[in-house]
Image: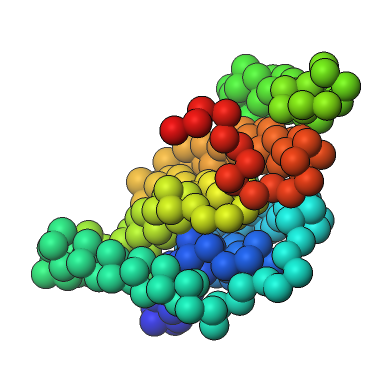
Amino acid sequence: MTYFVFFLGLGFVLGGLGVASNPSPYYGIVGLVVASVTGCGWLLSLGVSFVSLVLFMVYLGGMLVVFVYSVSLAADPFPEAWGDWRVVGYGLGFVLVLVIGVIVGGFIEGWKLGLVTVDSGGMFSVRLDFSGVALFYSCGVGMFLVAGWGLLLTLFVVLEVVRGLSRGAIRAV
Amino acid sequence: MSLLHLSFYSAFALSGLGLAFHRTHLISALLCLESMMLSLYVALSIWPVENQAASFTLTPVLMLSFSACEAGAGLAMLVASTRTHGSDHLHNLNLLQC
């Protein structure tokens, strides 16, 4: 089970690499989905299932869906997949940076696996993350209201940025 | 450094490099930004588990709500760029002329 979590951590890095090597955005989204699915699996193995589900629903099911249909604005007639030589060049360059960074930073000498799984914690206890996020409504209500206000403000920001006819931010016509 | 810490650390660094070495599309840069936010979310979620401090579990959820604001603003700029220039290619954003 420990090595499966290590595999999920590796999948997280590979998803990030897939986004960073700048293929066509259709394929960059695939890298982001892989990274978020493996990240969710990793958080599940640690036992914090609530933040994992929040990641799945809000990030993957909300924000990435919005990104996917915004990618339709960026349509290429001939999209570069990961087999394209420019993308492979970027990918290899980033892998080289990663390997050199790990070697020079000395991250391999004292390597340890880190936090491992919660295999037998039982179900009859108050879980860490459920009780923590519930503090949003009691002690952290100030930040809750600030976050809600920020999200409401973002709606108006978006409305004003995409408004046209010389009232918007980037519109030239 | 433990291997799982190295995992999100290197995912963050790779996404930051991908944002810096952007090529054609604005939305690829926005996707790299989202990937940085994802690695930050995982990092902030691991911290209360390691320190067994439940109140820090607020932090990743709060960060996610602010990152949703940022993603919305970035996509609004993408739409504005497409409606002005016809595509979201980054060479269209050339007002600084450098």
